Image 1 (cartoon, rainbow, N blue to C red):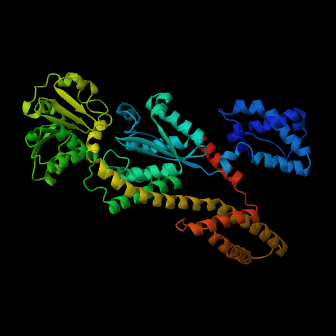
Image 2: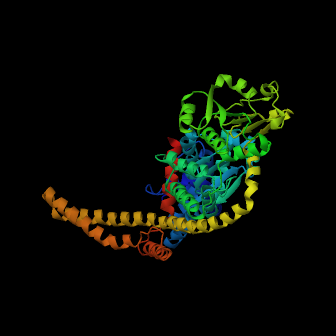
Length: 545
């Protein structure tokens, strides 16, 4: 019995209980020396596993030695023992889709901003996650309201632990603190969650369109990234379909607003109604979020505002688009002066350090009583642009993304009705996705069946050519080779057709899976160990690069 080095090295810790118990019955080390040269146990030493392998090598050698001297029935028993060991957790059950997340619903903004990963860093994050021992695929969804990592894990427990440790390492937040706020969802629950996120059901503002655009961006950024694999990319692409369908069929976006719109509504809610048309508005940052703030201000009747940005180019483009409103551009160097002349200040920049702290605001001139005597900062940036210390001042109020919950609460009854309609669609689409994922179960069997037939074809072809002698022409060799390939392809055509299914028809899918199990039995195509070996070999190769 030969044990694959990749298998033994990568998953040795899962086989130790079985190996140790076998060694207890036959503790002698001399038996290993008597092994025939063609039967050996080889281990690939790595810094991680070296000590573990050295410690249990005697037990492993005893197990193999006893297998050599045993009868055929005991040899089979050893193989069965290996296949039903702790490693079975990785082979009998397919990999799990897991989401490890922290959102605005339960996690303070102070923690979310430390965990946030800029879009430009998503490919690097995916690569690092997929280098973890039990992670096959990964995706990152990082927005101002959520930080969620989606993975395909070989082991749920170990995968979650590895990802949580990685999050702690990259953010500097202790694991215990992350565990206090994180949520974990697996397989069908994870699928339902991303569908709800894409549909806008998990947003502060029901049906807001920005999250669907952000889910689309995950797919766009993931294209070409090796760790953004078939399962995760399929999940996010299906989530986009769900998001579009929910908005079309339920009209959930009617009256709903984005985070930028909610920020404007919150500011107006806090201002005296008589000052809505006269309050002096300042928008700092003319990116996507800043542009949306400007548009929503215009929609609410604002006719003049000052926009501070690093360059004038973006502001000019907005000014050309919104010709009915007066937009005054000011450079970033004049931000403090502009703040002194504003009643409401919206901040939406990518700055990693606060633009306004207590010492910046304390000396600003007071605002008029017509706006309530308070200068209001509405900060929709993550990390935050306005320090929480500003709230200590009696002349200022600061609102961040967590405060947008007030706006959401205004229309709760309508939200619930539309959410119920959307949930019916999500349930239907979740079944379709699970069926599609089930249909992928036949892929290893298809590969094994083709490889099995190819081995037979090559062996029989070599026999045939050897009987024909060395003097046959290359043309004849090619003709015989083509003949053998044609026969094999025609024989495999029927079984292959019955192993392919797109998952859209549950009856067809059920029949396809029955066909898969039947072929596995008929041709002994038990793929469990081979699939595991392939996955572990790939992980070992990744860590060695």
